[in-house]
Image 1 (tube, rainbow, N blue to C red):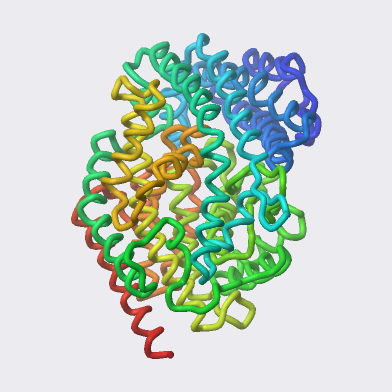
Image 2 (image 1 turned 180 degrees about the vertical axis):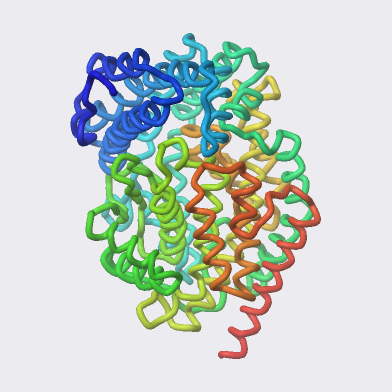
Length: 571
């Protein structure tokens, strides 16, 4: 159909400039588009975008695994600032052509709704703004990826200090905490100035598109068709009323078990019931091999898919100097493969992170069967449902044989994870409320006001820890939250998905096989159905209802008490 033959591999675009890409979009813009050619036209457009996005993903992956390499940074920036924003412009032109044609397909309802939204939001004047934001995001990753701390004469990447926070010796924990936060405290002014510029650019982009502020712009931009800013504020209030008191109870139990007058931030990761912290693995090979066995027990298809990732080298998990912070799973859309990036250091949280990112990976495998790229990748709310549900669905299978723990250790790991869920919900509410304030208060461009508001919100949602004398360290927490810098407003999705995942988990407690079957069905739907229907397919309900949040919080607390009782009985 097209006069130009599309390449057979993303490698054809690895070094492409925009002029190398334009002819393919020109060909699609000129090709016949009617009822007889629709399927072929869509397939060609989808293949082109799969090739280009995979080439961009490969450049991004290469940079995040080695932020110190200038050539990798340049390649990533070429895609993120020179190619992808202009690709979006041409994609919007093709979407407009499709929408104006009146042609449709039954399986394209959700994609067409997104296309219409993109058309309404697109402004040519925002192309250079989003290009500059990508450059600033790369600078943030370079700054944070180069951060290290000295420990007994060795210069360490910050993630490698995390095991010290689990040590029984409180002085070591404090030293590890201060070592991990000190580089962010030292870089405060540089990161604040970086965010000042990001704030101005985002507000300008929103105004260019006809919105009063970036918060109002981002809801349609993120295709949030099924909930509103008011729903998010309901979530904040419900977490404050139901989850924050539960967190206080969890932390008070921790304080008593540790025999402390007050909890300090370096007391939150040590296991009060164990003389030594759990060490679920020593090497990356152990981490991956044991994960494959765990996933095999959840569902043999998951085990096979994870082994494919091992065989095809689609994992980079160990922390090392020069890696970007955090973790992610990115989808290579052309070949239908996921890639998982982490900074593992041998703690329980690494196992949970790998389970989380693998949920995304299984989503990518399942949804690739959808014929078009726009049908495969749902919104973040559904993507995070996949990841957070996997954390809980896999939890009964973490014990030996082939797993990470003994039965007693697995109970301790699940207890830690359930406590983290409550802490995370409070953190999610504070991050989303903070971002809302930044972009709607009129004071988000004032660095001092931002820091003061962060402290106020942490006092609202995070109670039970003594932060006296640590304001600078407490403020540094939001500078460490890369989503605020790189993916603005990407955080409430974790809270929404956590509520869905707890429902999936609740189902699994009575019928694990049925829960996994429903979960797999939901993953395979990709982006072909609206968000409430994707949740329903997984056996959950999209909810912001305070009563639902309170009920799920009570379920978590009940299971925490049961695990504590079992631990006491075993001893």
